[in-house]
Image (cartoon, rainbow over all chains, first blue to last red; front, side, top):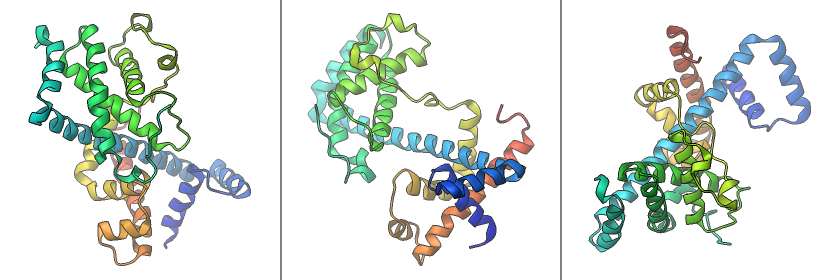
Amino acid sequence: MRTSLSDIQQIEKYIHQELPIEEALVFETKAIISASLRRNVFWQKKIHELLRHYHRRKLRSEMEKIHHFVFHDPANASFRKNILQLFAPNL
Amino acid sequence: METIELGMERKTFVATAFFSELYEKAFPPVAHFVSKMNGSFQDAKDIFHDAMVIFCEKTEDESFILSTSAEAYVTGIAKHLWIKRFNRDKRTVSLDAMEAVIVIPEDYYPTINTSRLLQLLEVAGRRCLDLLHSFYHEKLSVAEIKNRFGYKTEHSASVQKYKCIEKIRETIQQKAITHENFFE
């Protein structure tokens, strides 16, 4: 694996607190003197934040599928009616 | 206390009967609440879906302990979301002791810039997003990822994870450079 990918792997282990304490300390010392390493840690954390939101989007789209199923299944007609009645004045 | 068997279902939890059943049990109380607060059906649906997403996220955390029924917990989350989303005063929403201690993620609603960035990646880096999502959120094994994405070896699949991080990092760094104030 090339060096830049090994660096990413190392940052990943640091972010996920998977480095042994000695290695974590060495990593932090490197980060103090390397602006580029600090930047890369920042971006890698940002990627995880984006992935969290991507995960939420995926879950939400699953909820839409369940909603469609629940609200369009003839067996759930009374469920649907009861819910919609709550909002009758606002519909 | 309700016990949920989530361990083996975690990878496909939303597709399980559990979540479909929970949907039918938990939507009525949330709809009642939103209706009482003069919200619309669409408000109820949006808040409920967000509450279910947060509940799913919580169940993915192995340290999460559900100390009440799942539907009561989802309703509690929905009340917090109602307060957060519509900037309502907490005192206007009655929360019982269990509901009062529920914590919802601070960053649940993405900033405009985060949404834009995600949209960009969904167009320019969907495969990488999906691959990383499989690793970090679906928690698939390297062997499963190798099969899903068609890599010849598990080593290739593992290396691809880091290549994808590198590619996404370059894309979002570039975006930050061309839009100086992107991450303000």
